[in-house]
Image (cartoon, rainbow, N blue to C red):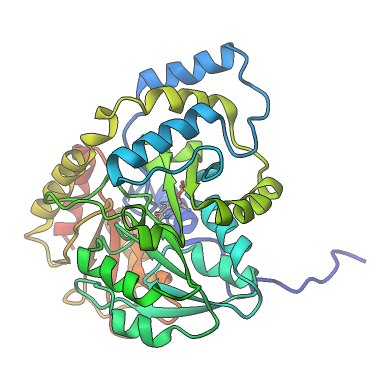
Length: 384
Ligand code: PMP
Ligand code: GLN
């Protein structure tokens, strides 16, 4: 009889571009600046702490919302950095990375027919999660080269069905960061509505030129309606550990946890003990802006003589390059060609759109790599 026929719940989704491009990089031996992950080792001290936690017997299920020690540390960090105290008991949950936090939040709050505003280009997991929940994604395009949000368009797209606005600052893939005006606009649009905000802040420590990270947590009028997502993977060079957290007012967190408990129930126990200890030392993340700014500046300087046009980058570890003076080929094809013939893998930006802008010719490069790797990649890009 064979495998029964199925109707796909995500008919237009294939394998993610990150898997495709990293696969092609591995296959061809290209320098992989495609999928975003740091090319630096995790601190040996942190690894020792995980080992100690395992040897101390912390190897069974953690409590469903996460171990209390880690939730307390997160609460202290949020209060210190953003001036808002989240109650560790009822307002903080440890998740299996940012992705699970985003998925569970969307699943918990989006009902069939609900509209969700997404600023595009957008991180690739948002829209499939909305669709699986039966929601309707409502894209609002950010305009190159600055990719600043057009709040009048956001306002005009809010309806009585708008359940959620998803924001991401610093933004993947554009490197745009929210300003005070953006936060005020968001406040004004959502004030006196039932619209929730899902704020993806996984790059909270990767901002440049002295700009502060603006968290929804710092604005009481936003914090009261927001689920805020963070990832230890970005902050501690450990994306493979898949550990993050979500913060929200107790009433929202109650609903989030109903979904969380049946998605993962709880998250890797020894990592949580280790991170609770390690994150007490602020210097582990306070140096990240300068560290990544040096990488950004080096990469931009090295490709300044190339035929690529360098777009602004204010945060995240991604640099966009415009290749329209080189070829008119679509980005999905050019990204593959660049990998095969010049040995540098990147991500085509069109994949982050519901409907990509027709004439946009942009590739995204991850500069979270050792200098020698950036130098070798830049040399190849300058030869294009
Ligand atoms: N949001 C954004 C904007 C990201 O770039 C990523 C991962 N690169 C995530 C969420 C997911 O984080 P995690 O790897 O912790 O699941
Ligand atoms: N977030 C990373 C990026 O934007 C990749 C995550 C993934 O591979 N799913 O490149």
